Image (cartoon, rainbow, N blue to C red; front, top):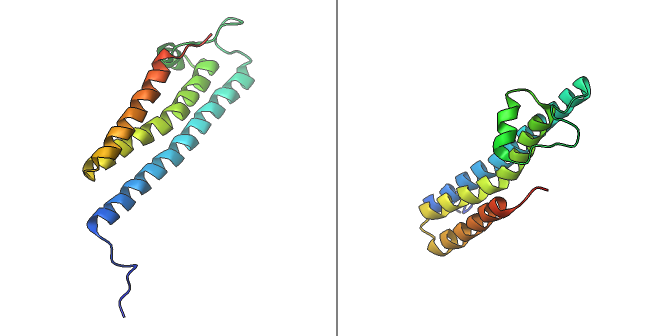
Length: 128
């Protein structure tokens, strides 16, 4: 009697490894972003200063990244939020690579379209 569960094709084992890497990246992306957001919040609570004048918030990712090196608490919180937003986008991009290796052209096209829409929505979105 053979155990069918122990036999898997190389493509199935490759897919399992890729899915495991993607799920670990999602998990760590959320954990790291939560730690960064918490650090920014603790800095804000300790200093009582956002690092910006009253009523002003960084509205571009570049501005927030520049201000992180100056330890501005709101910029650190923004960095954590940017990482949280980037985590599922990374998952979509990694899926494209996995589908390319699997030579699954329809899914490559569909996932590429989804990634393009995600990036387009980020670029066209406005902070007010």
